Length: 270
Image (cartoon, one colour):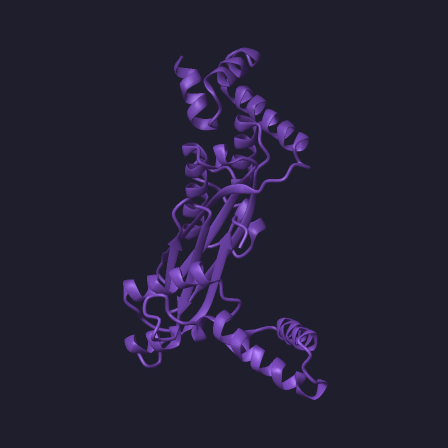
């Protein structure tokens, strides 16, 4: 019974799976672990074509570094499971300690038992029978950072600033990003592709409304400025105080304060 309990703790597998693995391995603990891992690999291969659209999104910040990870699965039932959330948290803890620079580097990062993240995900696949994958890994760094996890663990944001900022204003900006889904920090950061698309949409709408061709470019430019106001973070109305833009809200804290980077990860359909 002690061996079953230990194997269950190490592998995360169910009681009967651990019992059967130990029996098959002749009570050899290492062989039993290998049996459970192979089961996870087999399930992963079998379900590789499935869609993993549910999951858990968590974020954290510390010492000028912030990160967000999303561990994806097939069903909301598994996404809400305590052990699944705990695995996501352990992956995030490893990120905050090791600061990997790519998703693949994160998958290769060892957790507390010395085994890589990728192996732990495969093991969990064997336990649940669902496809799982590390869907997102994003990070930012700066003079100061903040993270925000929306209730339900389906949406999280991280943001970096160019200077010191108190907790509440920083959290307000992180919540702004969650609520308003900006496409860029400022108009200068919007890609040319997005600009061209927005202008063309505005021209098409104006044509359909019967506007003359010689006014279309002016109308498109006006629509673009409206887009900047609604979709770039610093120009958006602040959800904390709608009489201010986010930029003005930050300048109340410090005249030089601004956002240098942000990331928003969601498993919801925006």
